[in-house]
Image (cartoon, rainbow, N blue to C red; front, side, top):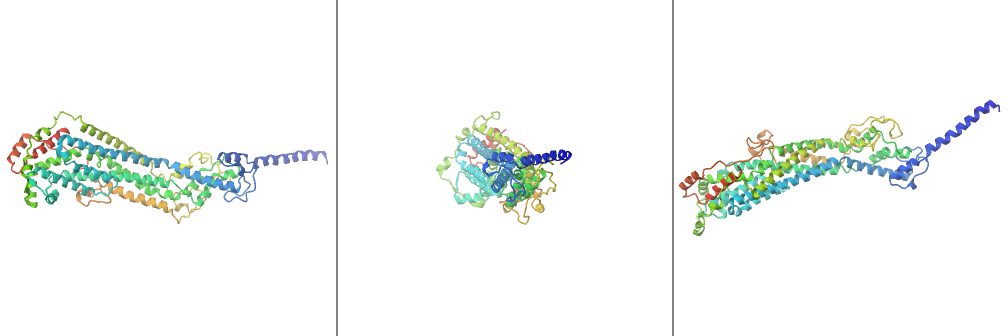
Length: 565
């Protein structure tokens, strides 16, 4: 062989022999895959040291691979587990929002009721003494029923309040007419005149409107927080379909099988996989957003016209005002009741003798107008206002968190795929895994929702079979949204009042003229100023049918009035 031929062939053959050997070592080694696979906690006994033929693979490309059948199965389950964790972690914010805010609002509201009841009890014991304590169960029952309604009890607020005023009328009617004996049947007849005679003035009507609207709003709002919490908890626990699991495996771990464990999926590739796997969750978004909007509207009511403080803080003053109205109208009320129910029987002489009021004037001494109470009554009232201010901040906080939770379900794919631990990001579109190799992902991104996945290139989605579990959550949200809309207008979905005064007069505002206070306004209803001397003259002129026991009631009302000035 000529020397010049030998000079050309020998270097060329050496090059050809050396290149395949080096390429073979780099392409066929599974050392990086073994390291990454072991880091996941799997046994290295499953993984080969060098690439093997891939005809056995069912999901990943059937080319030379570092994956055995056992590895593909294990990595497929790993991808399912990681996806479930990703969804749960990504929805953590919305779940904790509803869990923590429900707990906080519920605690504040219950404490508000407890303090309102304690404030009324302390005030009335201090002012009315034994007269109140002997009839305290009427007021205790009022708060018991309010609490039972708030906690979901089957209580008709309007009927319950009507019953409270009827019972109060029965008790007071006996007090202002101690010279008579009243049977149970007679007192039942008396209670039937509550609406007709309006012995307590306009207080029962106004208080009924305020109490029903405030409590309907509060109860429905806390129910909404409960529903939001339950829906978020349920939807965040996904059960991926077989088609989704295949797509997840291909996206997350087929790079391992190709010997590319450090190459992450392309961002757009990830979006298509997630949109296919979370198609049903995205369909929840429309009803979820309507639910959040309705929650925000009711929250505004709780801050403004349906403000529970405007009802509970001055409730003792309002009831005192009603007692004063009854005191002023007692002669007319008694006369009309006697006319309608018949003349009652006289009381025994012993009872009439006990009606002398020698001890009442000192027992019900009115406070000095300049003296601010420093006893438990003042303390509990301060505590009531402190709890309410805290609750107001809580409602404001809930509103801000609710706003952030809108569109959370359709945003899940985007939130997951922007995580740098999941994808290569939007700035690295050439050096990412596209499902087949390390290269740019070309297919277009699908729109959100089930029907838009008909042509999803990554996930097989049956658009004709919506997830029944998700549809149940959509229905739960729809029902709750309807309740919230009713509460916004002051109506209870179970006990809707058809009267004009509680229907919002068709305006949708749920407010009546002077009933709704302005936002964050502290409302008190003071009894009119009373001249004790003038009252004494008027009373003595009518003492034939005007019981001497009515005097303590005058003093009681005066004490409450001055206490709150």
